[in-house]
Length: 133
Ligand code: SF4
Image (cartoon, rainbow, N blue to C red; front, top):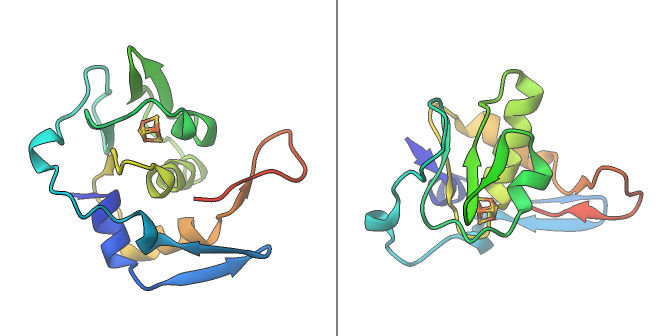
C-alpha cells in the first residue's frame, strides 16, 4: 500500500513545469511520523482509495474528484473511481492533499507520474484558476 507521502518519496526531486507553474512534489512530504493516526475514516467505501483520520476537511479532494464527499468533519471515498479518468482525478487529489490523508492501493510510479503531469489543472468553470497540486 502507498499513500501520498510514499508517492512523494517515490517522486522526490522530480519537478515539472506546466503552464508556467512549477510543481515540486517533495514539498508536501511529511517529516512527522503519523503511522498511528493513519486509520481509515468511517464512511469510506471498500476499494483501493481511502481517507484516513488525519483529514482536516479542507475540501480540496472533493473539488478535484467525484470519488470524495464530505462525511462528518472530513472527507471519505464515497465512490471508488470507475474509469481511468476518474482514477487519475483521484490520484491528483491524493497528490494534492495537504495532509497526505488519501491512500491508494496498487498505484504504480508511472501512473502517479502521469497524474502529476496533469497538474496544475483548471478548476471546472474557471478560465484562469488552477488546482496546483
Ligand atoms: S484534500 Fe486531504 S485534508 Fe483536504 S478534505 Fe481531502 S482528504 Fe481531507
